[in-house]
Image 1 (cartoon, rainbow, N blue to C red):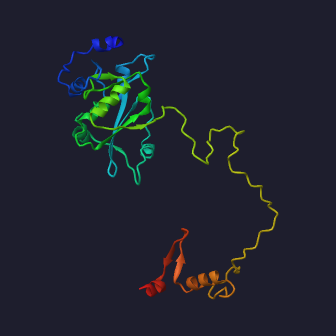
Image 2 (tube, rainbow, N blue to C red):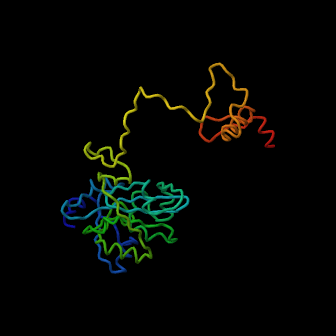
Length: 280
């Protein structure tokens, strides 16, 4: 990490000799490089404070710790340029039923992963003794030359090749869930049966065909299911005979006898006193 000299020069040396992550890496003979840097609370701060060479194909991680009352806890670790859509995440994880993923508070973070806010990363999964946190890794991390992650503190980072990161996670007794997150700014996948609004006018083959315009002079079709009532008349008698149209006759009976009234919402009606008395 010779390119990090300028970053680490301005940072006081920190003692990492007792860091549990580094001790675990050393005990399992996993090659790694850990370096101190300016304290960074977010992935955006890391990118600014600890820039990686553009041609290095290396990345820091963006880490989100979610909690769902039904489905449990999820630690999501992705490339810094990945688009993590909370609403779509449940579908990507194939969670069934109601899904309500929300960021867990720092108390849960400390209890389950032993880290403070801003210090979490994939290496923190080592502290999940209860094995009740699902580790979700971005498949994009696997194509990087190295992945930089906090070793339980946000004033230092540990660089690992992806295969060694997976080896460390396996040594912790965890099997990660791999998900291919898209990058920020990528076009969203098209929904089946829908035409995107941005599609050019010449490419709307899948849109609904337009109906021919109605002839304003054409006579209106007679309504075969209703009998017309003259203006000012009150419908106090049945307008239909049972043998003529049973459905309309039945409607007349229950409405004109003041048993029910139809509501504005389709399928809903109001029980009036007579029908309520029969019901009781």
